[in-house]
Length: 427
Image: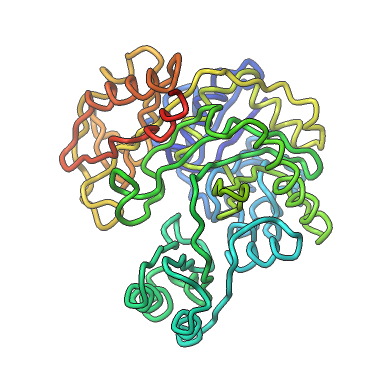
């Protein structure tokens, strides 16, 4: 099988790492990929948003299966273009990708189909949003979301009216998230513990992957601004007994059926970001692709052929998928550049990669690196994802942090509490 993965981050490195080990895959490309991806992975310098170039490349290389990593090309219609050329692709149509591409679409879709989520309002003007908050239609804290894609950073939790004014001004006047600030969603703040449930869907069947938990805020204890994700862990104990069945029946299947009813069958990877409240699971957000960094923690737990499973997805036969799950947990710790999620320097030399990667059960996924001569240097905000499996969650956490401690670059910072919430479930 000739396989193409589109994207360049840690998520895509994890995907090619998994696929490269599978006997069904004889040729593996990643476009554009990153310098941390070693042979047999082949790379081509082609932007993930170059739809014409990607279609032409897949056709010329006789690609049998394409897996789309980032959300932007999906929202732009890459899967539609591939399917029009008869090319098998894992990723929803542009219409179905609105579940991530528009927070407004997603919330209104959930309301139409009775999918449990937080109470919300949509506003096109800053003045009307402020009026809603001033008249007490929501109690603080309140969640404010920019409508469109914002690289995981378009969500702000405000504690009072002054913070709300600032957030709305930044989104709708200063346009810090670009066109995503055309509309905003005001949303009831939910309490509980977050969980990420990622499933594969062929438009009818759903195949849940192991649950995971992301750590969005930049600092320990879930403090500071949101980032693209500072780490994640995957452990079966994240969801209480019976919760996956409830999530499947009240959230996942209604989502897939609802999209089909509206004429946009969802075929690809559906990510449901959930809050586990006292009243049951509630949807915080949808993504329409593998999560990042969740993928780095999930894929090491998968047994069986991912390539074959994704091929079956494109053929509508996901119910025959060969995947199984390793019961051992996995933890991914993101090493970030100084200043991230704000402005950060680039070109900082990275030391200790070889020593960290040689530790048992540890894999280091590259996200924002470049090879200069014989050394790697930093190029992104999220630089590396240090991932480890363990006999239990504590073992995985310990191994991940021991490996992270071997790696150094100027300004490097990372959260030191990835997975700590999960340890409570072992007591």
